[in-house]
Image (cartoon, rainbow, N blue to C red; front, side, top):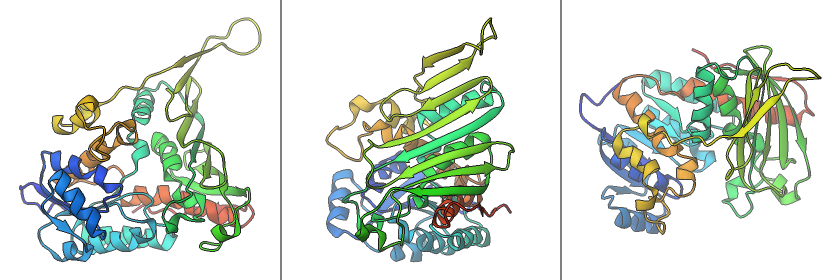
Amino acid sequence: MNNQQGRKLRVALAGLRFGGAFAPIYHAHPDVEHVAICDPDETLLQQYGDKFGFERRYTDLQEILRSDEYDAVHLVTPIPMHAQQSIAVLNAGKHCACTVPMATTIDELKAIVAAQKLNNRNYMMMETAVYTYQFLYAQEMMDRGEFGPIQFLRGAHYQDMENWPAYWMGLPPMHYATHAVSPLLAITGARATKVHCFGSGTMREELVQRYGNPYPVETAIFQLDKEPISAEVTRTLFHTARAYMESFNIYGEKASMEWHMEDEAPILFKMGDLEEGRGRNIHTERVAPPARPDLLPPELAYYITNQDELDPNNPHQSVLQGNGHHGSHPHLVHEFIRSIVEDRKPRIDAVTAANWTAAGICAHESAMKGGKEVLIPSFEE
């Protein structure tokens, strides 16, 4: 799998509007030799390259794929391009990282998994939700057994997409559900096996036309393969008055954790002893999940520990907005790069990414069938 033969990696990043937040992190990684940037917007490409000192610039991804200069490509491109571009990157013999979602159909997921296996290159879905401060805190609690047996899980992602690029308009909410689904599956190490989902609300007609989706909100109940655990997920994209939120709630026998608001600390509940009267006492406290620079090389830890030194007028180098999805960006870059260097699968490999993404695709299918049960395929090797 490892094709770098002991040298540092050469990485290309495609898509600068959000991807620009990642390019400097790749540039700082000690296992990276150099970074190229790619964007079809020539003006954006040149402005970004000049401002941040990236000499290798491309407007055409195909030029990168035809070159032997690069070992890996990180795609931060529009959703409709993810499947086709991921397959092209893998078929070009390059490792592929891709922003969420992996794809929007089951057939596309199967094709990416097949391309990854055929070409023996790494694929990693860059899911921010499982590298946030909040999730890393919960994961350590889980590893220490502090939750006890998990009884139920809940996730939500609320976001208003008005005035976003055209491909977002009317997108089925569950086609972009991995931020809410993945923490629940990752914390349990489970796969969603079946789903009942209901659409809710009304969408104005011009938003319905592109995808045939009539719902601004979708809510699903998933059965996990670690029975008898189930999980509830709600996703909104339009016509819902709610500030942006990605959240997950973990309900265990010994402890539970709820994270409801972007700018508020999670709430931890701990089961007390049974005393006189009905029910047990529950201890409740706010917790402040710490930054985890110890999990990163010093060059990348900088991006979550030295906020005051970063330029607040720089929309990409600055990590003041939650340190880049609550500190996740450096962890994602590090995991992708180290998986290649160490010749191993990344944590969110093609099979894992397909399992997480398929849950949302099948949930929307259920909603369009009035909530009927839909079985979710497995992509296990």
